[in-house]
Length: 322
View 1 (tube, rainbow, N blue to C red):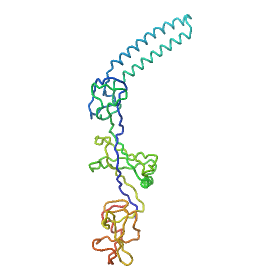
View 2 (tube, helix red, strand yellow; view 1 turned 180 degrees about the vertical axis):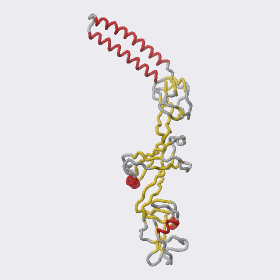
View 3 (tube, rainbow, N blue to C red; view 1 turned 45 degrees about the vertical axis):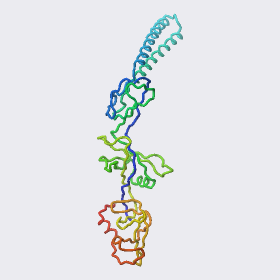
């Protein structure tokens, strides 16, 4: 029985720090495309232009109307200063002028929406509309991902969550590694920064989110992998893997009783470590198990043996256990 740690592997989903859809805010023909699929773009860089002629005409019309109403307002104010027209008439003229200026601002906004620019530094995705296409308001043009850092989501069982919270105190964070789809470990470690508020009642899991730096843009949005997280285990019952054998996908050991008779017993393996198993059930700390010669004995046989204490066996297996 020892306090130790074990590296757990959790299936994970990899998401970009920022990943958004770019959609048209105005209706019109897609007149220009300034970027290409897969290209890195910078914040404020021009990406698409929807034909602006209609919106330019609306702006000119609004400006002309605002100029006309502005002249009327100036004339009305001059008459009001001479007490020729009432203050109410002046207020009505001012309201018309303010509305005309608001229409100009609205027309400018619509015209600006025809120029679509990158909202942040990122990588372009596949185009959903081609040059010359008629797009409507809300139509998807493409997606853009900021891959400078990645959010990796994975689910942790309740018992391991409790062990994590006991191990990590206060505002400190745990460092984790990412095993990529090619079975190589991502060179940059990540940190667990967020845990969801609620457990999933159906699975008994809670979602963790680890943040990984991605300076070389190796990771992309939508990838899969596995998070490797070191979980503390208290009072773990450890046995050498070579002391076990498998029958019909079940794991067994030979237990030696007080009469030196071996008995085959199924054990429940909780976790796996290099050369060791963590046993969840089937054995007591006082049991003696057969380490060498398990292929030479049968269930119920009486044997003679030499006893070795666990403290001497574990170092020979080259396992570090705290």
